[in-house]
Length: 134
Image 1 (tube, rainbow, N blue to C red):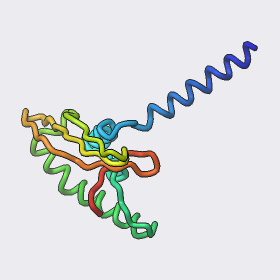
Image 2: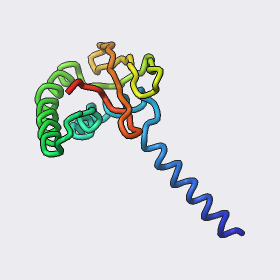
Image 3: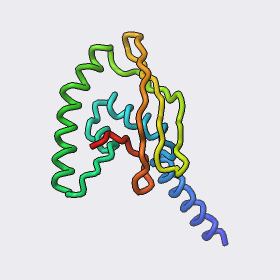
């Protein structure tokens, strides 16, 4: 009986750990991707983009191109503003089908500036991704 209880408790911990790794809301997912951008983890940021290209080689090529572009242009823009300090989720507008949402967010920069923007998010295979229209 005790062994079963311990095994159940360990399984529960593992499930909770896995669940906490996958952001369950579009805003939480966007915040995670923006955090990756701030940490200069451009691959993780781009992996948060929904690339609808079905051909795996072409999709990989698109992702690599986007990583290079974000690394080149995005990092310079962020650095000019003193670095991205925080991404604040203002609101989430969920579509009726629950598979897309518009997230309004504010980015707080090191120089004190704040930029508000919106990002369309789509749910693909249970995971929230940024819809970049590609």
